[in-house]
Image 1: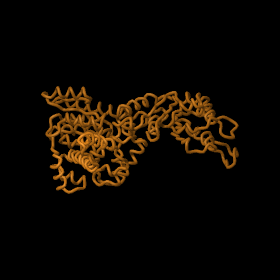
Image 2: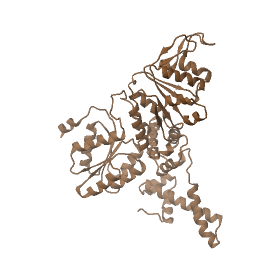
Image 3: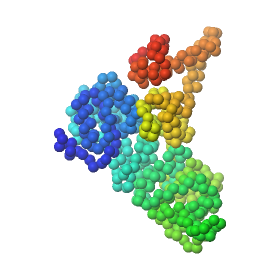
Amino acid sequence: MAKEFDALKTEDKEWGRVLVTDDEDDVRALLCRAIENLGCGLLEATTGEGALEVLRNEKVNVVVTDLKMPGMGGMELFKQIQKIYPGMPVILITGFGDINMAVQAIKSGADDYLLKPFDLQRFIVAVQKALRKRYPYLGSHANGIEGHESLAERMGTGRQIAALIASVELVAPTDFTVLITGETGTGKELIVEGLHRLSNRAKGPFVPVDCGSITPTLIESELFGHEKGSYTGAHQSQPGKMEMASGGTLFLDEISNLTLALQAKLLRALEERKIWRVGGIRPIDVDIRVVGAANEDLGAMVQKNLFRKDLYYRLSEFSISIPPLRDRPEDIIFLATRFLMSAKAELTKDILGFSQEAVELLLAFEWPGNVRELRNVIRQAALRCDKYILPENMTISPKKEKAASNTVQQITEIDCIAGNVSLKEVVRKTVADIEKQVITEVLIHARWNKAEAARILSVDYKTIHVKVKEYKISQP
């Protein structure tokens, strides 16, 4: 068996993390050994519940799970993963009697299934295929991205980000000028870095310019450079960012802030591949690939004569639009977990993960500040929390007003007819309804361990016991 595994080793370093879930020790050991020899990181669980706990607290790229396990089976685990971690590749292991269930899972979005006794080589191929689906250029070192995290690992694994990554990979090897649009905090700079790393200019300079942070009087010198004595304070000649980026990529962030006069000079430089320093008497050749980014609609600015139409078309030889985080909720928990792992390392703090209520709050919030806001919220929550991140640790507010108003509406519709409604009774029933819901969700998260639920809710065990009886909460 050892020789067989040696033949299956790859030259890649750890290029993905695989979670193996199986209650049979010998089967799990066999799969784990194959994954380790493949060069992947390894995580293990013996139950479906344990697998979900690992997913909450660790970075996982692919899940391998047996269908038949005590407690939560593989099919229920697959459904939970689909709900909480959309896009996560799942490979199912099944006996002959459960093959129909596995086929149904494939139709529902599972990546593959293996029939026991399975072929080890087929298992390895299935894992490799799932990893490459998860991260389109995982393991690819041809374009200078070795040692860098993939865009999917940094931005998310949902369908929209997968399509965006496909666009990046399509245009990166060309010299097309690219225009990236998206709200503040969506990760435009990550896309630009990805374009540069995957381009034929990856070994050349990457020069960013924040057009919104430089005053209009200095931006021309910043871009084109200047000669000694060209203006007051120009004590020596200085190359501009376009000249410094020659042979590589120039990133013009917040390009909508450029004045119309400077837009004209930029257009001329892009067309002629030549620049003139401020005060210069001869042109300087530049070989650059330009990527522009804006959080405003440049097309609308063109209609208002605030941005040159010819420059807009020159910049948008290829356009990439990044959707806001609120439009891709499938990436929220993935990114939150990533930021939590980073915060744990930064704070050297043992945090077990997110409570179920915290997960629901993260998914319900609209994130006007996008990924940047999510990162800040998670870092602050990690600083405030104990073992688990709870809703009260986060600086965002749950949108429960609608749910509460629905409860009040139901109460008042019934009681008003009877003529016996009172404010005190409405408040009591509303609070009781929310309290029951919260306790039930925490018990589910704690796997119906009342002592653990009491700890999470910061109440004593007796209180939980009494409330469970009062609200007739029972395990399904």
